[in-house]
Image (cartoon, rainbow, N blue to C red; front, side, top):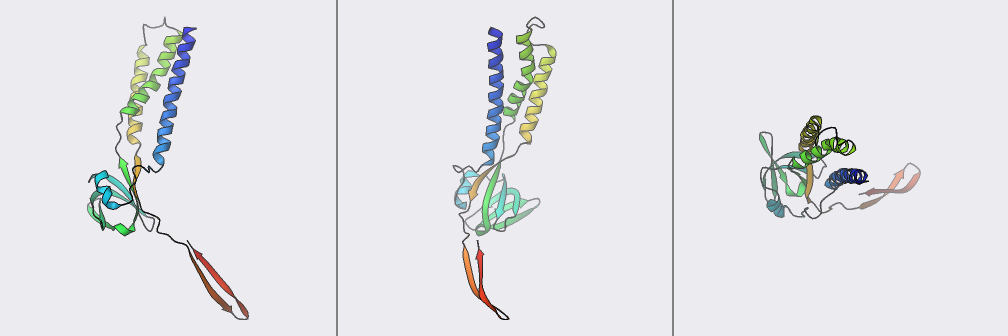
Length: 189
């Protein structure tokens, strides 16, 4: 009876860890409205110089580089060896690539590596006194892989989003072609 309760607790804990990681990654893809600013001047206090940012301009192209300087008129990025200036009016979105500690990946990977050993410790406690040697290896490998995966994941947080400047425009003009008469309607949005 005690072994089955312990097994259920181990499985529930592992499932909770996996679901929390999936939830965290899904939330990281959404725009964080509590962090996003509507003015470039306020951005200087949020993102320190030298951090990697992704800037989307009015044409929709994305430029990424290290943040050099932000003023009310110009945002300057270091892209490679050059410094690129982007007018503040052309910036529609800025995303900051936040650094993340690989410690969470190490802990999660180690926990996943330990599941097999904990299961066999509960199922057959007479095999080893505690965990077997291969279980410690699995914990170490899981921690290493989890740390490497966590380090490879880059989280982008939207720190600036320009207010929508797009407007809907309707043009109506006469259409005269040969013996045909009509109206030409063009909707731009």
